[in-house]
Length: 441
Image (tube, rainbow, N blue to C red; front, side, top):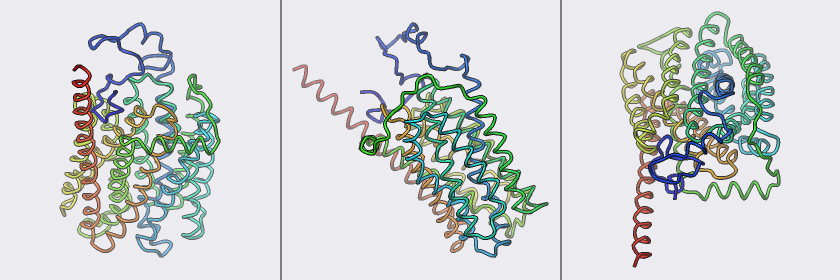
């Protein structure tokens, strides 16, 4: 069985759709006949940049209110936990609609669904600044999140179909890197714009940036060459989902994605409130600039392929979880440089872990890749919604230490699930050895 079947560590270049006739050679002729994109080949750079821009637009829109929560609280007269719903509604809408949108992408094509999703999301993004009340703002954000649901799963499925297996982790890492740049730029831009002109103008500027990204994405993304239309019949979709959920490795990957995002969602929803309070008392512009640490996530996500090659998939997940936990503990310090270092480690660990887990989903699924990726994205954004809400409630009741406590519990969950994967792989390996001995007798 392959590593994807057993949960064994996956090394870059070890899992391939191309048959390998011996343990020591790779069939170069088969590689040459593979018409899918590879680094240095035709269309690869255009594809990478297009999906990078899609990632930028997705995260910039999805978290456009996160750095502005203290200002929204003040302007609309609501608490931190109430304002956090402007984030949770968007991520929750994405989590609910990502599976139906993935089914549409199986029928109508990845590029078509991604283009339509971005078009609707940026249109709503231009309406968000005019929301007259918190309920209206939350409703618009929920619609925006539902529209963005067509991006993540379709992008991962597009890459799994159009990119050679050896380059898949790196390609998905670049898409995730676009997420980190979008999250960073959205928060930095909104922070400085809001300091001068208020949160409504800041959100409007992000909407315009997303429009530019959406147009460039559609112009650059190559037409798919390996897409085969699937069925929209509910019974077929239900069967595909059931198959994925019955796969123990996929279930573990979904849970890991949700737990990593619980940490990240909680930390970045609450950090603005912490930094506006004593002993920091930072202005909104500087708080927005804190999100420049997302650049670290860009690097760690892009390096995910190399991490898996050196440490194996589970080793890379342990490293991501350990780095995140160390960052959480450092962030408890009352000294700003240590808080910033903590955020750097949290961001690096999260993006590395997310890139490893999401790329493993694409490799593990043998059919219905859009649904497999959609289930991962659904779990991932449920984790984001839970982290945003629970993290804000924990901060309201126990301060920053409460938010950190929630994050540490989630990281422990990542470690426990990864360890269960190691145990399952050893048991399967031992069972295969026993069966092999019995067959030779």
